[in-house]
Image (cartoon, rainbow, N blue to C red; front, side, top):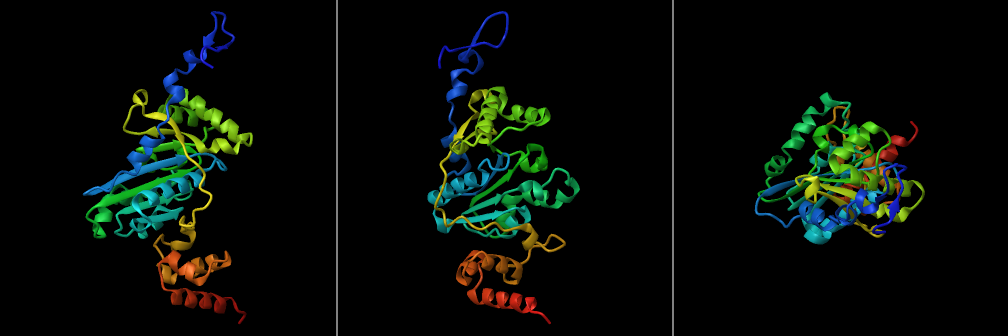
Length: 304
């Protein structure tokens, strides 16, 4: 490829691949550094990590979450990680405990963290901004609070939730306005690379889903802050939790419903074929609580 000529239809001559995309941009792989920064060694105090994964439907965001979650469990030990998977930050906050690592994944974040509902976000954004202190209020004296959001269109999430120190783009965007925002974060060279990745995904190339463009927020673009992020699909990961939907775990006022009272969640899990023991383990309650909840649901469904 080096030295290959490309014609851009310009009368003044020809440009090479090196002219358009310098080798440093073509070859940079920042996967390991992004992982080391986002999942550091256990500290002697309380620290916070904020990440974002953005891309169109079908680009592999959930698989990327699984890959990163498995990395966390392998590194810190399953017993040390509180892994929460939800579509609402309020549910994630309610499920926090004092284990050394709190990994809160908020997928489809635009549903409840929308930039179009700024006034509704004030309270939860305030809690998010002091998430490290909330962890300490629970009784933790040291550990890591990791919060990572996933959504489809960059501008659809409130700015307070998308200014992460770790940002991974899995596809580009169609509109020039959205593209301009992404270019500001990853630069023009990798915006072009991201567009190529998206085009490959759109043409049915599933293998390319393991390639994304990452940005290390604190590091400038021209100093290694942008590069490729690679991951492998996790095909067998039974420890990845079922998603906790805000529609089922929050009441009409947005307050968290305790697991032992959440009959709707128990019924949904049973409908998916989960045993009472599996449901109890997932919810962190006794099996007898699940049995009572399912019996209550059956009685309520019986005709009068």
